[in-house]
Length: 222
Image (cartoon, rainbow, N blue to C red):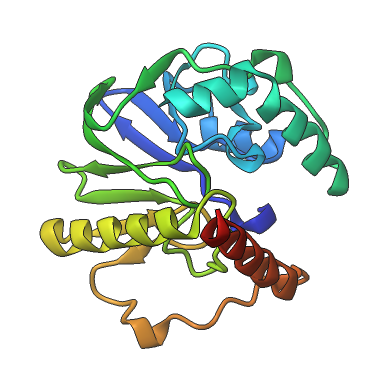
């Protein structure tokens, strides 16, 4: 899967929930199987929303900011631009949508209960979700083994989000932490020294680091 992007599937009582369906059409079809009733988006980046339109019967839930990114056409434009680099076919973009917006706090989605936390920094529309019955923390594009980080919104917000996630992990002790890219972390392994420095293969890491510094400097001057 491109960028090792995570599509998380939850099943309960015959229901299926997908979190961040992507990227390529065949990946979405494989993850969805015979369909999904619910979709949750952690944020509106192209690699997290590209598969939404391939799930016309699902109810799509996201933050208000993500809904605005999609309604404005920004997300679709990003899908078209970024997917072209990798020669990915575009299918179902006319179905890109958000059916229900959520704010920080408790969330009921199908048979599941979750707690939504604002997670800005990578982008301004991110959310992280804690699923108490599953003992599961879904972090969005934070805490991954492929972490650079990518900071497109605010370095200060990014640090605050990391602090929030670490405090949440310390309080709740999840069995699994699922980042937006790369393999999940579990409760027994993943001591800090066991996670290697990111080697993402072909990515321009130096440029991404330089862009982070530039954005931080511009914000500091403002």
